[in-house]
Length: 317
Image 1 (spheres, rainbow, N blue to C red):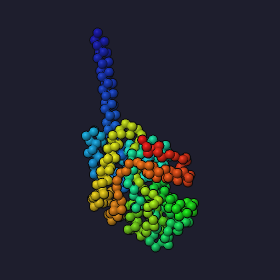
Image 2 (tube, one colour):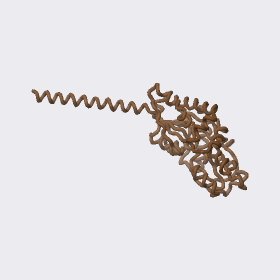
Image 3 (spheres, rainbow, N blue to C red):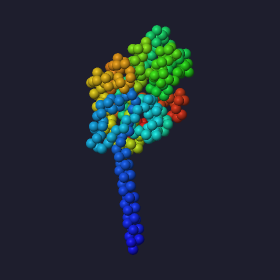
Image 4 (spheres, rainbow, N blue to C red):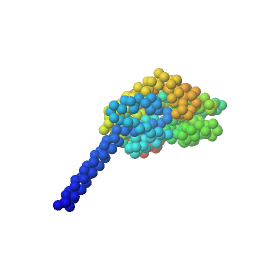
């Protein structure tokens, strides 16, 4: 009898242990679901939002925490989006096209305000290059698959120069700057604050900006799974980006002080970049979709992406 009771007691204890373990796993799963993982780059609107800390304040009453993940380049960020290691991210106009081409399951939440004034083609101050037409047969640096890649393609197209008639130097901004200073490239295509810094400290002359060629927008993207299950949280993130962007437009001095230690670039360059940029969030419109479709079509025509795409598939949800 005692033996039977012992077995019964052991059985009950085992059942309780299993139930408790399941509850703990459920609680752990619930906790994980309460974390919003955001991918960002050093010079983007998410940096401002992170610095202000207002997103954490907005999500705290809902029980959500924010986990920030830094990426050096847009393609690297979209790869993380594809892998599901971030929920929301921000990147430039061209990387999102590559992400769609790679079958990344994402949707576009909103667009950033145009920032073409700080993107352009730089040549040395004493260069004999005075127009885009002079870039034929020249060695030009740019980051492959970036917004600068598209800007260069559009500039050459407008000038009637075949892309095959330049010598590409595929370099990220830091390496491109060194090559530019050493005279190893004839021109550099880049974005702020690298543009501003090169103008001020590396004898760079801005040949053209992106005006009339590209809006050079930011795009805020999220995994399909996150939007399907946490759309209200995604909406709050965009609302807070918009609020922090308006703060940035109204507080240039404080913004420069915030960005200087993060970007590790001279404050004069950051100030120049900030003064010619307007931060903001725009809803996805037919014009913005058309801009992105042109990028996708251009990359397809150049055999850079494998198939023709309809960007509305990731911009309308």
